[in-house]
Amino acid sequence: MRIHVELMGPLVDFLPKSQRGQTTLTLSGEATIADLLKELKINIKVVVAVNDDEEKELEHVLVDGDEVLVFTLISGG
Image (tube, rainbow, N blue to C red; front, top):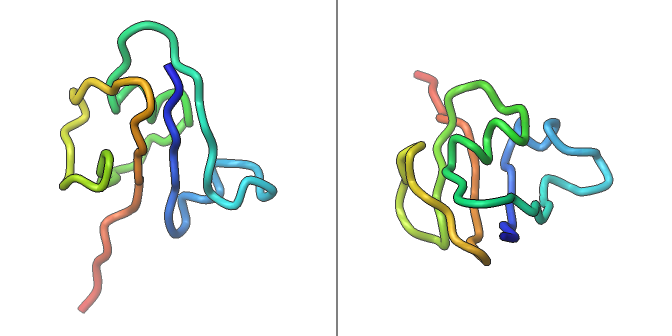
């Protein structure tokens, strides 16, 4: 299945600079958000939205054509 992924903020460094934080990945079989993050080698706490929907859990099963937005939590004070 093909999944379009957009990484925001400092996460863009997980992809080659030429991709500007966006890529389309082909994943085999049933895959979850956790599988996608593992494929991208992202091992930090992130927030994930699928198809412009609210935050999804790592166990959320992806389907062909999903658009996934990944960003870090913002903190400060």
